[in-house]
Amino acid sequence: MDNCLKKYYIITYGCQMNLHESEKIAGILTELGYSATNSEVDADIIVFNTCCIRENAEDRAEGNIGALKKLKKQKKDLIIAVGGCMTQQPGFAQKLHEMFPFVDIIFGTHNLERFKELLEKKLSQKKTLIAVDEKEGEIIEGTPKTRTSFPNAWVNITYGCNNFCTYCIVPYVRGRERSRSMENILKECKDLVKQGYKEITLLGQNVNSYGKDLENTSFAKLIEEVSKIEGDFRLRFMTNHPKDFNEDLIRAISVSKKACKTVHLPVQAGSNRILKLMNRKYTREDYLEKVKLLRQYIPDVSITTDIMVGFPTETEEDFLDTVDLVKQVGFAGAFTFIYSKRDGTPAAKMDGQVDEEISKTRIMKLIDLQNETNRKQSETYLNKTVQILCEGFDDKKGMYLGRDTYGRMAYFKSETDLIGQFVDVKITKTGGISLIGELV
Ligand code: 5AD
Ligand code: SF4
Image (cartoon, rainbow, N blue to C red; front, side, top):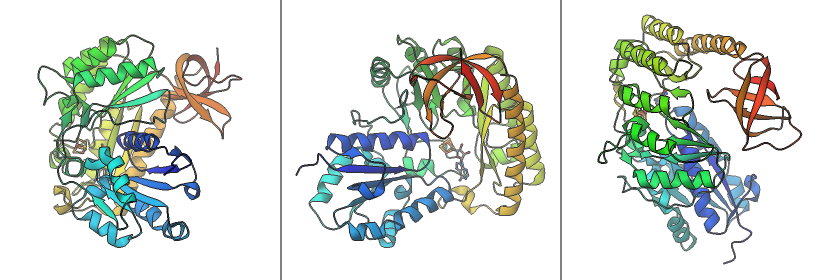
């Protein structure tokens, strides 16, 4: 069969981990002779890479899959595949098959690396192919990748999670934590730098526990080794877990010539009672202590976070503890979420689920507070010159954009294409979280 003109379209939900996994699916399809299209209607294969961390991501995916029924009727040869965390939930693949019988392939997170095999098998059979292994396997190296975010590149360092925060479904759908070998990670990073990538983001559900299943290694050691790679590039990593974020690591970040001066340190809540119920294994005092230590080593570090409101039994007093912590730390950015009940997690069975309206009021308060902090922090940039890695062009604004070492986004005009270059930008205008400037 001649695949030369075949096109793929991938729809990704959720986090950077998923975006990177979509790059692997794209890589596999590219090897099979497919090329990318940005129109569903032109596609020969449509892949949904789903997320189940919160209910709304799941609802959106289901809505979008359902909407393809008509297209599939018109285009009999169209292949529709659904993968990602959503399908990995117990019993979900079958449910999905019953809801959407026109879907051709349903594959789990543990089956992603075998997507080529699955597609080939599907092409030779009529019925829906369901491939969702219950248990994670060994790490599979060498999956091709079609990267989509030059000059940034993601590199997996761990898969799965062992933390079992009581609200979170990730450990159930991504399996136990497994670390990639340092050798393989370093090889991938070196290749990326050689290819001209200027920013590497190391990815894991909890990068700080990297190497616990290997011998004589740690995340601090990995930072040290990646930082030794020659070339002009920046290093980022996510996500950190406060319980494992230790002084050795802080030291390694502070002396690294490559590590950006920003750390994403999800706090989730500022109330000790809620943190305990969440099984986060640290107190607000521990968290604030780590922030203090981090700022001792890197005084200008920018700290970003994830915060959840409306966890079961959260009272106004608990919420005010969160507000107080947010004020004390002065985060450079915060992703805020309303707790979403996930079947199969311990929190789903807890009494005292919080009313949606109360959660909405709480999240709005947090967003307002964070916006105010962002505005104040942005003002300190006025008339300063910052080094920006140019990452793209914003069609709507007609401007290039990129981030500084602290992760702050800046927009600027240029006659020439600067994507992939470090440039100096003088900030002339500040808005909410982003900055506007001129090339100097
Ligand atoms: N409900 C709401 N937010 C959640 N997160 C994880 N699980 C849930 C859930 N059930 C958030 C956490 C985590 C981020 C990636 O998603 O804040 O840090
Ligand atoms: Fe979920 Fe907690 Fe693991 Fe993060 S550390 S993926 S929140 S269980």
